[in-house]
Image (cartoon, rainbow, N blue to C red):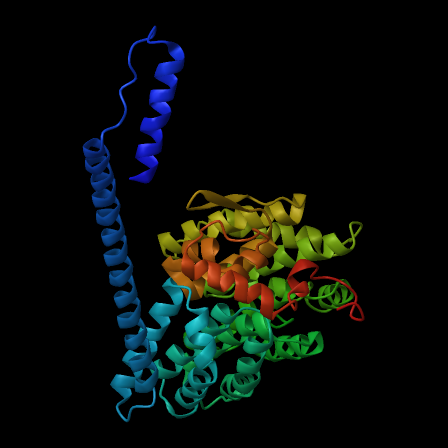
Amino acid sequence: FFFIKEINTLARIVSDFAGGQQGTVQPFSDEDASIETLSHCSSLSERTSAAEEAGETEEMAQEDFQYKLKVYIDSTVDKSAKTRQGALDGLKTAMATKILYEFISERRMTITDSIERCLKKGKGVEQCAAASLACLLCIQLGSGIESEEVFKTLKPVFKTILNDGAANIQARQACATSLGLCTLVAEDDIMDVYATMESFESLFTHSYVREDGSRPSVNPQTTQLHTNALLSWALLLTICTGSHIRVIAQKHLSKLPRLLENDNVNMRIAAGETIALLFELIRDVDPEFDYDGWEPLCEKLNALATDCNKHRAKTDKRKQRSVFRDVLKAVEEGDFQSETIRFGTERMVIDSWVRKRTYDAFREFVGSGMNYHLQANEFIRDVFELGPPMLIDSTALKMFAAFKARTKARNKFRDKRVDVGEF
């Protein structure tokens, strides 16, 4: 109470100086000071105690969550296929809905080994789950050395399953999709990107209607495989150099319209969106680009945009007409129907076919967690040029610091169509 006594002394001096004209200054009493001090201390103690309890609760919840993840990782090598499947699904859900970079980075090769084992020895559904988990692992790690190490291990397995006609068809479909996204995120050599695109071409070109008008005999499951391969091929188009875009346009732009005659609505839509994407890319490279088959292509697109075929399901026709109205505008006018994605206090505009194909590819794996990843995942924010995360929690801060420190290898998302030498 030394400070209070000093105030009392000062008060008396002021009173004497004023000559009593302004009345007596009443100093704090020791008792008042004690009561006030104890009140503040009590309030501060309660707040500190509540904060400590909340921190302890959060820490306990985090420890429980990490324990579950460790159990999942250990269970991916269990003898029971059902247990392995549950473990893979648990890891997928966690990676799709949370930022786990620090935890995963320390265990990335263990998880990679488990994925590889499940792809090689698992059956059907288990292989599909493992392929999806590989993509989520790369999304968590971002574009850099860590994801490159993961992909170098898994790429040969993906390609073996993809090109094996005797392999489970669902597994081949899953590998076609996962190989595309993992290549986008983790491939470190543009020539290897082109080689992977050729693997996709060797699949979806089997669905081309032949020049004599006859249609290839392809079952629905194989058509879905070809559709997935086409969409992955289109995804990788978005990071090709300008010179390679010219080569692709010369080789495929006259043939891709043959896929518009496919009996499967998903293939028709995928083909239409890929054509729109390729037109956008080639016009970006060469504004004076002229396509010889422009008029018949527009006629075909218009027919699909106004399709009234009685033999097709209403939902298929509705979906198809909506997509092909946009595709027709893209081809005729170079237009794109913008879409705004809102997440937290931010928003992102999907204003091009390139951005739409990229967004759809990531959303396919993270699902309902896409908005959270747009807020907090530094890698995905970098892909869409959103800047540093505005969602600042401890997890986001750790990931942001780690991401900035560990890689500068993301220039392929900043300028996707530079010359090969510059790439």
